[in-house]
Image (cartoon, rainbow, N blue to C red; front, side, top):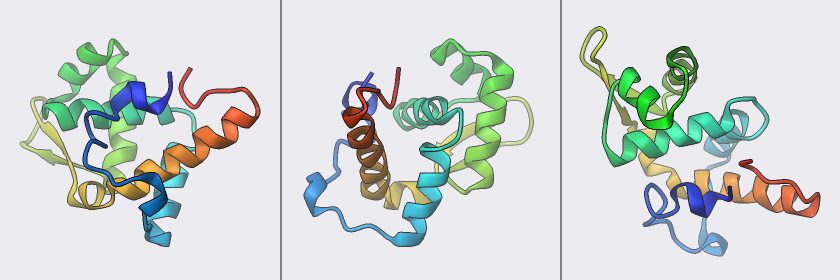
Length: 129
């Protein structure tokens, strides 16, 4: 499933044309480490799309994405520890929201994902299976 099918109309709807994106090298490195080489990159992207549409807790994310609760917990820890999502509340019902770091650098995230897709297109693979 290409990126556009995943969430182009959700979190990337206001991103400028790809060619016009100016990225911060430090943010580019952070996003690259989280969304390109590690297993779970697709799950983390899906979580971001889900909470951008509607902030929700871990169980709600798990049900919406039809993924195991522990898988969601793990990927939330990765996103949260890297400052890409924020938690509101204390305990089981905590809601997750995109962080300011993520929101203010969506064009850079878009560019990272697009770069990966272009490399995979050459090898006939897809970023998202």
